[in-house]
Image 1: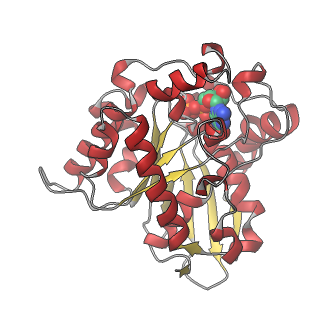
Image 2 (image 1 turned 120 degrees about the horizontal axis):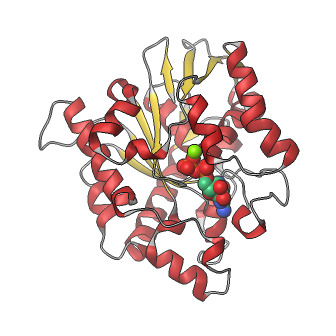
Image 3 (image 1 turned 45 degrees about the vertical axis):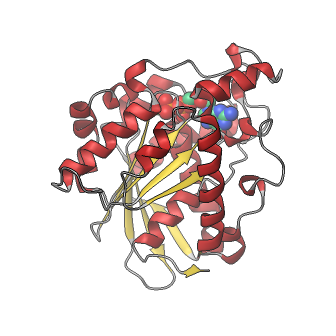
Length: 302
Ligand SMILES: Nc1nc2c(ncn2[C@@H]2O[C@H](COP(=O)(O)OP(=O)(O)O)[C@@H](O)[C@H]2O)c(=O)[nH]1
Ligand SMILES: [Mg+2]
């Protein structure tokens, strides 16, 4: 995702099957459906964007109710990003958002990651997606709890695409972008757990992830809501990431906040990749609102 016009750019990065394509699809839908709440308006900037969104994302997810296929999303959209313009009622300068749905292979080495996200170098923020179902401890618990078998889980990614390796690679790319070798990169990074719907079996209903969003209630970015979830997810990672790899990487960043979201609000792996009901996104906007707030584009409340 890239925003310019005012030279603000964001990137979405994550390993294979971490949920990038579905995230982009539902984030764009939310930019429209939540416009009244957040006092912005969103419009597609060109015909290609409208056609691509319609054929690759909207029709599949919302009409045919099947998941977005891998090749489908990546191949075309790497060359034709979806471009939208977000106008704010507040009169703040609009931002242009460009979404590249990159193929996962391209994040498997530092060099190719930097190339694929040509714009990572110019990014003003990163949403880094981690699929919790790819964390070995969560997988074990998922199977042991009788939630489903291995077939209902995402394929395990190769070692070099593991979330922690990819996260380290991202930090290295950001360090070289900021031309620092040891210090912490300053750029805001939203460490975002995807597919939180599938974690319900491990978490209580009182988990802040499943409580109504205060950002939505107030129509702006709510700091205490984000802080609650950040704290909650840090303890969650402490418990499930037994080698503490992810948390130690978080400490290598100057400005990192943890988020959780679900694009679909259901696990299509358990229903042959067909959706049982239309997408019911959960907290998809949270990391995006945080990045907008980091760049003073939306109002913030405590
Ligand atoms: N439970 C659950 N599964 C999801 C969700 N979003 C995606 N998935 C599953 O994860 C798979 C990979 O998602 P995708 O967006 O293609 O990942 P990408 O490779 O990073 O683009 C999909 O085929 C779905 O089975 C979600 O919100 N919840
Ligand atoms: Mg994809």
